[in-house]
Length: 281
Image: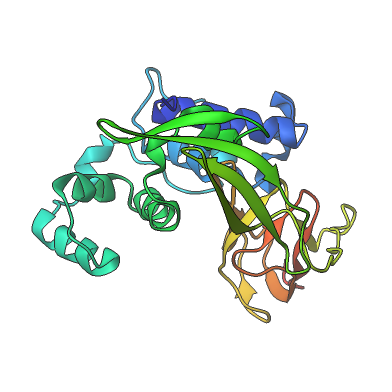
C-alpha cells in the first residue's frame, strides 16, 4: 500500500525538502550554491545518471550543483557492467546466511543498501508487510484493535491495551491482547535518553564551522582529525528522510576536530566538523 514514486520525482521531493528546510530561494541556490552541500540524489541527476532531459540541463544550475564534476553525456545504462547473477547470489547468501531467492537477488542488484536495510527490519520484527500501512507508519492508538492476516485463513486480532511508564533503562512495558489473551512485551523507547548531552552548535559567522543543514543521522564520517582535505572532498555522509547527503569541504584545509560519530542522530545547526583553512587558500 505504500506509494511508490519514480526516481526523478524523488529528486524533486529531495530538493524541495532541502530548500524548505534551509529557507533557500531559487536565487539563493544559484548565488550560494558553491558553498551548499546538495542531496546526493540531486547531484546524480545533474551528473546525468537518470538520463538527459530534452534541451539539456540549465548550465548555470548544473555548474553550481556539480562544483567541477564532469557530467556524463551517454545513456546511463551504457556505463553499467554486466551482472553475474550467480556470483551475486553467492555473495548475498554469505551476507544473509540463508537461502536466497531470485527476487532477493534482483532486489539486491538494483538497490543493495535498501535491500539490506529491509532484511534487517525483517530479522528484527518479522514480515511487517502483513501490517496495514497506517499501523506500520504510525503505530496503534490506545484501545485500537487491528486484524493481521499472517497467512491465508489465519488472522490475528491485536488490541493495544496500555503502555507503561518509562523505566530507568529507557524501556517500557506494552500491554496488549492477542486473540483475546493478555500479553505484554518490554520494548526500548528510542525517544527516551538516559542522559541528555547538549550538542555544540555551529557558529554561522565562523566559516571554519561546518554544521548540519538538516536533522537526520550520520551514516559515515569519512575523514579523521588532522587529515588534509581539498575543496570538494567528502567529509561526512548523512541521511534524512531517506535522503543521503554528502557534506563536502567548502575550502581546502586541515580537519581540526570532529564532533559526531557514525550512527549518531543530529539536528539542524549541530556542529559536525571544524575545518582549519589552509594558509595557501
